[in-house]
Amino acid sequence: MDKCGTILVVDDNPAIHTALKYALENTFSEIISLTQPDAILKTMAQQTVDVVLLDMNFTLGVNTGQDGLLWLRTIKKHHPQMPVVLLTAYADVQLAVKGLKSGAADFIVKPWDNEELVYKLREVLRKSTEVVTLDEVEAEHIRRAVDMSHGNLSKAADMLGISRQTLYNKMKKQS
Image (cartoon, rainbow, N blue to C red; front, side, top):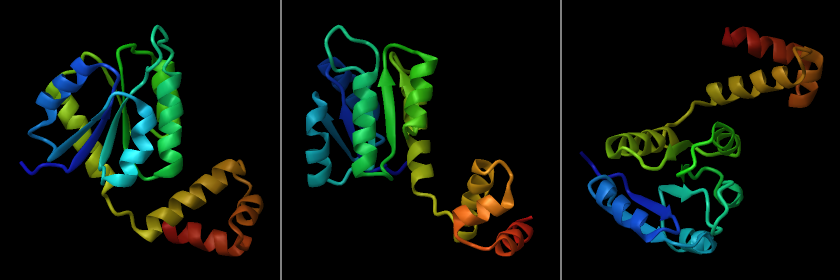
């Protein structure tokens, strides 16, 4: 199986880095490890990274996941298309939902199953490299505008900067 490129692993536990190195060495051609998140943007500016595996907690004794969410938003602000997979020992549905709403591609709980970890990372990379057609992008954009305007086509057309008739024609074409 072909190797997937470069993964950036950010976790403050050196044992996690060792375990992930063994789990991922046959999947990724390069594994970059950071123990502190403050070097993420500098590392990403200096090296090509295909996916980030980001721990959720970096403050000793604090297990809220807020550190990870902060760094997730920081990465997404500077690299909006970068797939980020969150990693945590504290499985919390609300935290997972917050992470996914903030742009995470997936959420993995420690301890992980190596096969599942590799599968999820490969899927995240596959999805991040899919090319979406312009028609699909337009259809999604129209759907979101209609949803945001609660079905009011005049309001949706205004949001999109097109006439109501043009919106209607585009919706008709898509169905």
